Amino acid sequence: MEVLHKFSFRLLPVTLSLNPVKFVPQFLSTRILVSRPTFSNLDLHLTSSRPLSSSAVRKAGWFLGLGEKKKTSLPEIVKAGDPVLHEPAREVNPDEIGSERIQKIIDDMVRVMRMAPGVGLAAPQIGIPLRIIVLEDTTEYISYAPKEETKAQDRRPFDLLVIINPKLKKKSNRTALFFEGCLSVDGFRAVVERYLDVEVTGLGRDGQPIKVDASGWQARILQHECDHLDGTLYVDKMVPRTFRTVENLDLPLAEGCPKVGAR
Figure (tube, rainbow, N blue to C red):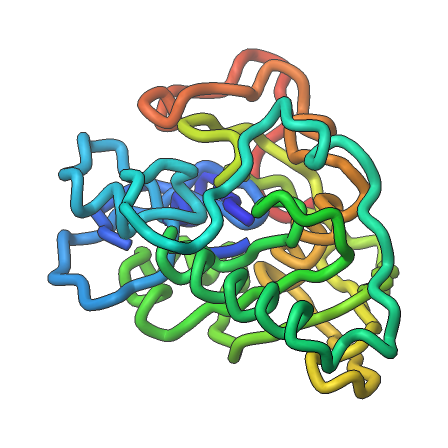
């Protein structure tokens, strides 16, 4: 998933080459200013208000929704318009979770997410209509964003999560508005309102039950990725008149649009 908000990074779900950026509120994405680091297999999508070098774009994957196409045996990220992104995915038969096929799908998803790089990915994004999501956010990824932005986003690192047949429910009525982006909708962002506290249950890649209680940015990533499984893109939930190109992310919102941040 790729999410941004005015007080968060442009993510390079999840989640590069980074440049300093200012956040425009969103879930899985906030814009952040980052100094240009030397990357070694970074898997984030961040967007910057400055033009990114090709290597930076490649490493900015998830949040930016931008990236160079690399020659790889891995599946490509499916783009908006493909029916697989607009129709509900099927549940995975629990008896098949340990199969070579499902385990390879999971491995491919993790590698694609990290190569993008991004902080989240759903199986439909690589053309597979199954209810599987992967997500992770690291201290390294977060270090490229301004502290005030990550604080506003309540963004904290978490280890790789693989959730099969996830079921999400809100744990409170608290919400926040931030800019989001998506690897399947390259080069654009929009403000999306998301719950700040959620619970997700499902099965791990070992077939065992798993439950995740999440808040802040992680909760946003989970909602973004679970939406993919229902055939919903962030643009289907965006606040009207907030849709824009990455290059225009720093421009003010139209008069009457809600303020970005926690509500």
